[in-house]
Image 1: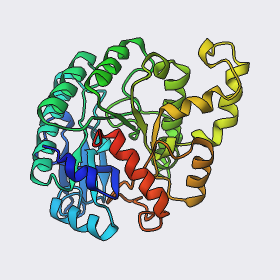
Image 2 (image 1 turned 135 degrees about the vertical axis):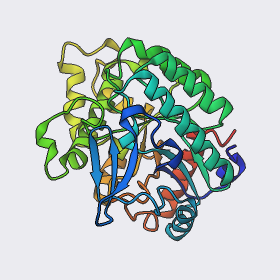
Image 3 (image 1 turned 30 degrees about the vertical axis):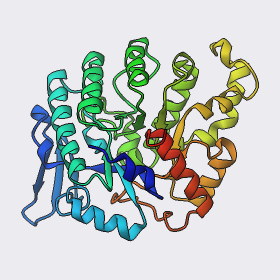
Image 4 (image 1 turned 45 degrees about the horizontal axis):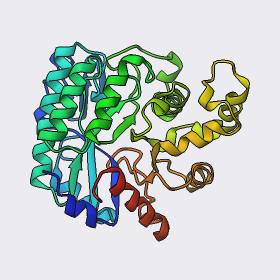
Length: 338
């Protein structure tokens, strides 16, 4: 069970920290997941036909909780909320395989939290290709396993404003939990995506930011936040390119014919951003400052992508006043305060 007293007492709360779970290996049918090693001992990680080479999960904070807790202490992080590995969202595979994976994954994640509840909590994986199953697993994960909410991909096989998702959003609100959105590289278990993103790691370096910006625009222009005003949705990496595009997105509200009536005024898009939450995983103080100038700090959360190749080191550099704001925000989002 999540130790909400420990969460409420924490000074630094990291909400962007992925985990890889041994118990979830081989639970998604032909998609694995699977860990292996080359003849030279180099690690690989397979999901379906996608193979990630050279990233070591075994023996790292991703899979070894003692190493994670030791590294958290060194980084000055009091508390982490763990989430699924983006390579294993599996939103495009057969429903029965996705359900099996998510159930096994969430059970294992809950067990890990139970054993380390003074430092760790977790978000659930969901089979978003079937909305009924996603709602059932969200309820099981939050009510029975005591996970704090859901963590899904930005590409779930349908637009985020698709009317079929309204039932899911209603369930999120009814359960009073947050919904976290994070991209995954295209082509792991779904459409291949833009071939230009397959070189120089551009699917990670630029593709993620594009997916996040599209997610923000879809939630706002598509009326999701208008139809579900009480929903709490958090977008990773400070919303991707969204702040750089703010002028165009604001202009669209008064110039484009498809804009819904509730957004047809100057600055409507920027105002709607106040309904979303964002994490700080942006690597650059200038970018974070620009984000705060446009969006503010009222729904800003600390996120590190802990132990990832791009984990940033702003934890010790964050202004104490901002750190306190983000801690308070996280406790509010995670329902750790009355």
